[in-house]
Image (tube, rainbow, N blue to C red; front, side, top):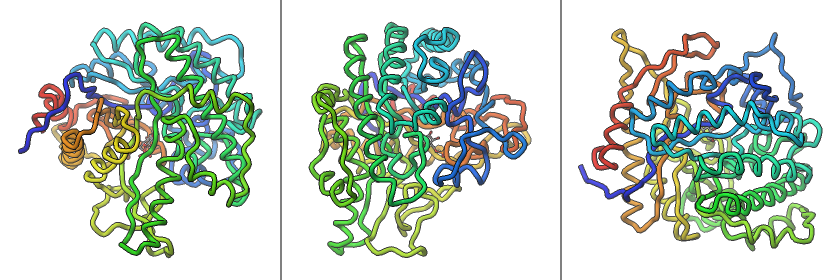
Amino acid sequence: MKKYDFPEGFLWGGATAANQIEGGFNEGNKGLNIADVLPGGKERYKILLNPGFDFEIHPDQYYYPNHEAIDFYHRYKEDIALFAEMGFKAFRMSIAWTRIFPNGDEVEANEEGLAFYDCVFDELNKHGIEPVVTISHYEMPLHLVKEYGGWRSRKVVTFFERYVKTIFNRYKNKVKYWMTFNEINSSLVMPIQGLGFSIQKEQDRYQPTFQAYHHQFLASALAVKMCHEIIPNSKIGCMILFAPVYSFDSNPENVMYALQEEQLFNYYCTDVQVRGEYPAFINRYFKEHHIELEIQEGDLELMKEGTVDYIGFSYYMSRTEKKAKTDEDSSEGNIIGGIRNPFLKTSDWGWEIDPVGLRITLNKLYDRYQKPLFVVENGLGAYDKVEEDGTINDDYRINYLREHIQAMGEAIEDGVELMGYTSWGCIDMVSMSTGEFSKRYGYIYVDKHDDGSGTLERKKKKSFFWYRDVISTNGEKL
Ligand code: BG6
């Protein structure tokens, strides 16, 4: 097998999010966030994408998988020890804003929440694992959603600034790598989790969505500036959901359509966060959708001053597009839409598997921005089976990860500057889109099931030992 040359100090590891692993949803004075009101099961996806959602907990009607999740809140020591056994150099996690500011708009931070992350960072540090921290990963305080209408309100920028300042000051000696908003561009298709609101009618969504984005860009720029001031040796990145868009065929109409979809979805947010200004293509889009942004004095300067140091992104799939599509064309598993690509196989959940797409992504992003890249999510959600002897033989996951790591190796040979790879869901957890436990990504199995049953016992899968070897040989042994 071909050997790849990953750079020295490459950040191998795994990725998680607070709301999908921690549990303890009402412990330590934590306030409620959006994830806490999302039920598990079939309803979840509908709720995520559809309006009319009341943001309340209905315990008699639904099960809420994030409330206990996999109980990382109480078991972080055990879990971090397992990550260390795999040789992790980095662990991507998020801070739950509601542990630090339970409602989001308080002036005083919650000491119990701050102390919890001190313990987690100390534990990582003890094992020589670098924390990579997402400041906001789909877990906005629910109070800000209900009282302020989420990121539509400019006041939220101030609350976010306070939160960020608090965590930078508190963890300045413990955390060097940061990221602002998880998959910031995903709100273009799914605004609830990222922007904190849903819209009743499609045609009404443009103005509030892009105004809310403007506020998030200001918040991101403020965070970047503050990070550099408070933690001088830090690196802070953006985080986007990148799915390269392929044209269905060589018909120029379809190629143009694919290009426009790529500009809006993959580059609109990234251009602002990396280059510090709105891209030219968005002006026409704003005009055609009657969007007029309220931009205050100093906003554009701030955006220019707060550009990120690296580009973090998630990569799960590519997307194929044609201008005139019918329902039969649809690739239903791909949450970001598109049509079925006949050259690709799909996962148990219908997500198209495309390792070459990762190499394409890395090349596209590096060609456009010449900034260091960091693959902070990638992985295979699959059903796992515990054999009678207790083993879990997840060769399908190993194959998936191997092919994607090879694609990164090729991209490095292509000249791309790549900082690291934190595969998604290094330990099984709640699925973001479906709220299931049975959609497993981990190297570590957690005995927890869709109905909430299970002992929470951790077990090493076959991929655990495989990934340990990948890391110890810096990607030579795949
Ligand atoms: C990303 C999110 O979109 O994909 C994660 O940042 C999420 O939060 C991951 O878990 C995988 O998606 P899912 O729906 O399979 O959990």
